[in-house]
Image (tube, rainbow, N blue to C red; front, top):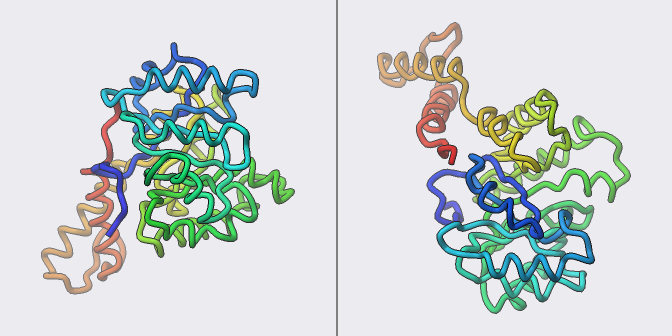
Length: 279
């Protein structure tokens, strides 16, 4: 059984908005992103972190629930950030630099109780412990912080260089019974092609969502995670052939259709029906 946090289907697009820019909060909520992340970490310079926390604290409201990314366990801002995490309007918490289950417990201790957590896996230690992290009852989905991960391991490149690590996070999520992981950001804002290519690759690998750093990226991510019209038509032909054959192996859509193919077609149609609507 999946550990969810009141989402009818897994969110695909996760849009960051800086915690020190309250003028952008509602704009982000209206961007079409399936989830908005109010960011107290990388998007906020050290000198502004305390002010940003006060801004977010005053703004949080159950009428516009958001995810909050706090600062890491080993920072001076962690305890104060964690105190926000059980407030109304916080759907989940992104914990950066998560390196073990002990970091999850530290968050719960500072927050005063359990909270839904989306750990950011962005270090070698975090990756090494990611199966145990994924299996923890507090965890809803893993997020791959590819840029910081490359820096930590001295890896140059974000495609085949990280294939093993991405595939392992997909596997660990499945073993833990949680929703598929969320892939990291693309830094390109005005050129959609690298973003679309990266998002389609993430989907092929089994990821279920992607982080966005600008509203321009949201519609592309949403579209890339939806089944295409061609996929839907293929799936319909397969299901029709399977029903006509009463589940026996049959030739359809130019290929032999047996049980795994039928199940894949059914999954595509289910995803087409249940993909979260854009805001």
